[in-house]
Image (cartoon, rainbow, N blue to C red; front, side, top):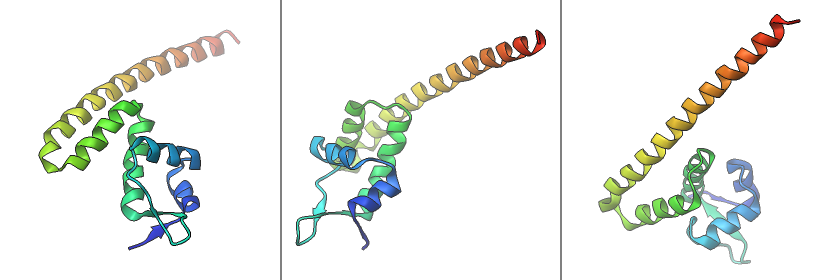
Length: 119
């Protein structure tokens, strides 16, 4: 099993060291293992989980919901229906954001066309 230094995890995930520490502190990330010198060493599972968190965060999921998702995941497979529900609700919000952005983009393109026509 591979282990990763904090710097490698920062490079892999794009999270800052402060963010990694914060996520561990609030319980979004389970306690990270340490080597004999007490330095954090992340597992492949940690890095994979952070990839999930990155996706959820980048799509606007609030930390409270990410914490709920983490809690459900750690509770076991019997929570899969609840996880599906949470992710479906988030997916609906993301879809609404996309629709809003497409509308805004259309508006901007129309403005560009207008300004180009008056030149």
